[in-house]
Image (tube, rainbow, N blue to C red; front, side, top):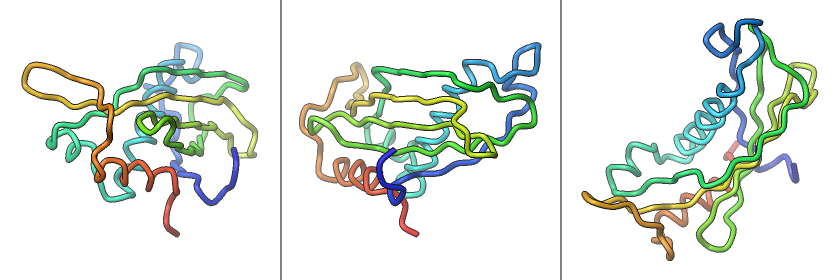
Length: 146
């Protein structure tokens, strides 16, 4: 991660529903945590995902890279530390570290996102971001206001 000024943080607890039969965090739970982290960051800049959806916009994932390093188990605290970057004027990347309580990296993720416009009968990629949407993405890139 680059600077620590623009890191969005969300702490989660690994619950039984997040684990496999051995009590280890299941691979699909990482994706759920990642989505929750993105939605939480949007809320913190003052724009809920449902509000964006009502305005006809979606921010779908187009790529995911996830590297597991150290397992999380039932009861562990997980700190998600995420940074956003607006790329190519229309793509948003989100890099997230899953940190253990001692600071060790349990997993690393990089997610590629785009903005899409949803109408009654289609979903189309937005090739030029409306200024309000661009400002929201730039606020995500800037990081939390402390």
